[in-house]
Image (tube, rainbow, N blue to C red):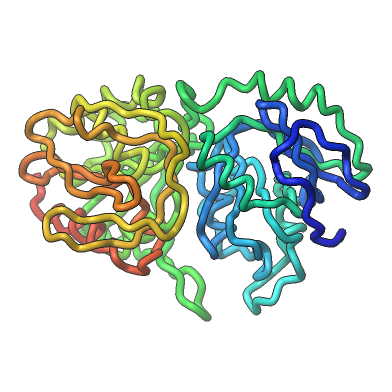
Length: 398
């Protein structure tokens, strides 16, 4: 692999291509940022965002919530523990590509099964190294998440005019329903347990006498289902487009609304009517991330596109019931407008970074949701109580 020389920061439009540059990021603004390509060759267009987590790059790349986005990692040493089949959250990566400071090195972890370059190439995902990621992050913080194209060509040949046209022609995430593109196609029962060192993922025993959760998959992470099973539930998973009758035919004791990508208002066109019918049953309901936003819409609230979004594993969230602070993992570019929440709906959590809404519940607590990812273990277990609370409420069979 090429060395990790740092190329020009994203300040000047179309700087000369440095010798040895095999990758490029072209922003809709016309700015061109050169680097070293790795992983797959080709190009991909989407939104450029940054992520502050120091670990878990496979988890991040395979999170379906990142569909339509390429990730600038603020931590410089991405790839140094390689890749393995245990650290993924979906069958394939959903993020379009990654932008990193240093070229990934040979893996140093005993758990590694391959290097990151090979994993990215095998899954047709593009990497761009040698970038001043601090400068790019500052740009996103100051100007918002831009549209762009990431490209990799081993011979270093690029048609910058075509790439710029792609970046400018991409419509952006606002108004885009991506849940349909990442959801499963059919109903299935979840069978996996939690991971333990030396044992891998255990099997879920599927005991029939446990309370039954039907999870609607808008782009879910596997570990959410593992935590629901660990908390004592039997879990069935249905597609994002499942109807009320299809959900109820499974005999749920409670309903789970998963995370996912895209604009909640767009997904809400078909999801919100179903959620409203599910709320009318009085059965317990729990939502995470996109599921939180969809629940808010179903209750009469509104969502809005954020300037730069929240993406990282170090986001402090205040629990308003007792003032406790949870260290959370977040990945969202839309937020619930707290002022839009109707009477009977209470705000339960707020972000201590910017004061935005991070949780809600309806009067009586039968339905509740959070904007963050309790299954991602950043605290590491600050938020596991949410799974226990939800599954515990299912004992009251309706």
